[in-house]
Length: 410
Image (cartoon, rainbow, N blue to C red):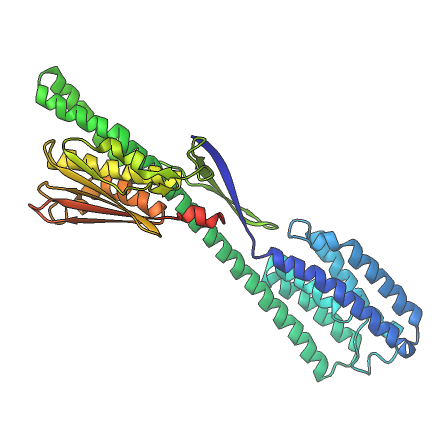
């Protein structure tokens, strides 16, 4: 089995940086057009157009700086804010009537882009810091600020803080989601390993314990030791075998979740041709196990077929262990258009009420992992019906298109 690392990158922040890039370009063009169409209002048009030429060059040159949080450094934010404040304070020099007429400043609404960069980078506190400087500069530029001036200043201040707060909430939600995906990936890997251990090592240890006790002598001591190791291994399996996956938080790219995936052997993966389930279940047929199958092939994705066959094997193991070697069992395969149903029934004593929950508490995860866990991973279900004295029936349902296969767009 080959193992590979799958990287899931999530970022609710990156679209905001792309929007900010577009905003800076559009508002730079808007400020230039305002100056061009209102050039007759400037007493010193050379001052206005010199600044706007610098603003256009600055905006275009610094586009890579606002592409993400890593490139948008504190030094750049400080310089960008200085450019915005300089444009505001130069407005009365270019237009002598600017302090008496409530018109736009030279950078106009481009200034809000500088404040928004602070908000996206550092949250609402950074936004409050930058918008306060912009507010002071606007009040100084007006000389005698009126109600509209204070209204505009307050609007920028509140809006930037609100956006900064939303960014912080989005980052927190992103980290929570990344942690949830991390836990889910670790749980799935742990259950996969636990199923393999249950189907192999634990079964052998249990058999050694039973045979050693029956033989007596030195074999009994060996059986006792095997029983102790079985209990210890069950405890380890139920408490968790797999370390948590790694989650890194990159300010520019969002949360990164790295999970370990297992590739099936060549010819057994989802990319290979479908597999006939009957060929996998037929070897179970014997004098004590009856096998009823459809006349036509029961085709499933190879991964789904192997997992379903392993679940059937685990159910038959339970029949041998709990119902006795002489118990009769029946396997029935039903091929429906949208799903495959396999029923395993025995004529044993049945399972007492509450026994399954007690077994899980003792670390005996045969039904929980080897049967229900496998079906859950395939997007199917496993139902167990047992009446004391009347045997046990396990019904396994698997959709024709497994969850993983559907997600791949096949």
